[in-house]
Image 1 (cartoon, rainbow, N blue to C red):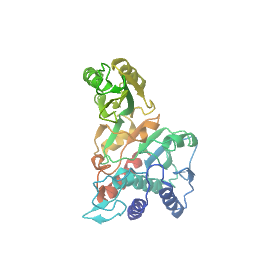
Image 2: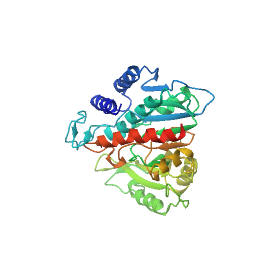
Image 3: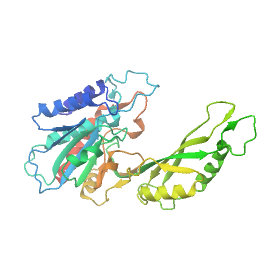
Image 4: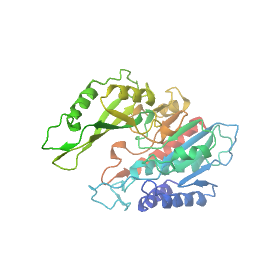
Length: 348
């Protein structure tokens, strides 16, 4: 099955699957389920299946990862759609984020599909639009699924246990002023107001520090203003990226920022909240007994869609995600599948 998983990942890499256009990779994932005679369902480009002996009386464990990718960046020196294996590395767009985790979870689900007396139902969901947080991502699929009691979200964590994940709020900031010709006096130039915003950001404090996720992180990421050298613009547009720990709700952070900054600050969405699972949860303890460490993840995933305890865990290494000449070690997938199986053996 491990060999078949690697072959599946190579096929997925060959197929263009930019976020929102993953229909062909969804077709390929369907082929896997058909080859094992596993019934499945599909909504948009989300493909999901439940274990053979699904029992509505039992809690359901969701196994989820995504098959969409970002666009390859311009620094690629290799064909991003060529899944070559060299020196133990499997190259290709989406190999690390999150193809390795996806095929490992699909293999895990297939391994336990016919388990005669499971303590949990298993639900495998291979989903799209994770990279774009789209409406047809896991969030859009959840209303179609049975109630979820627990989740494993496959992302590259070196198979360590991400027991918490920061939430995200993106703010559009607007600094308003008076447009004019550059040759005339103007005491209301919005560009000159940027410094006041930067000063306000430097004094913004979120005092609560999470044990697993650390402090709230506020980062100014975009500034846009003006289109001609001789025209003072009417406004400056800025973007603020805020990573929220589990000590605050997104709404609390939004209110604090809106009240503190000397400009209009509008959050794009408040739905991407932080997520976590107690360290004493049997799933986490099972991972610890297998020698894996726990940590808080600063990156966002489809965990944000879940309102149940969830663990982020998968083969690969997060810093490789979205990089040029992305790769995952074949050994990481092999070990990942084996460790996933051991993990569930302890709770299933």
